[in-house]
Amino acid sequence: MTASLAAAQPGLTTVADRAVGRIAGRAAMEVPDVLGCAVTARVTGAVATLDARLDLRYPAPVASTAARVRAHLVGRVAELTGLRVSVVDVSIGLLRADTAVVRRVR
Image (cartoon, rainbow, N blue to C red):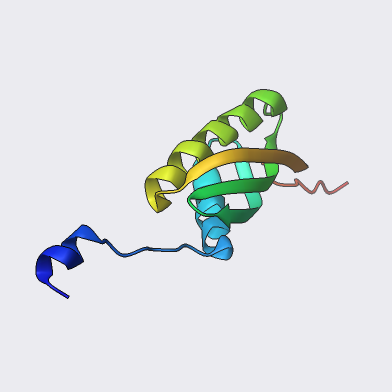
């Protein structure tokens, strides 16, 4: 194969579903009020679909936080993997207060 023919046919990089899920999970943790998450991904060609289960800080507004996570995942996963994200399903697992339990002695 000549050098000009090799340059005209770039290689193909594939990213596994599990890797995309882990990348998306880290990206979700970048959003304020997200305390934990689990993300699964399905990659078909150059398109990814994500299913994110989030633990949020209480009393964070659930709807607006989920919308911020959805938008952030679309941009960040595309930036980090080169994949287009078509769907992001978000579900809320837990609402957790970030205050420590205070024990009182009587």
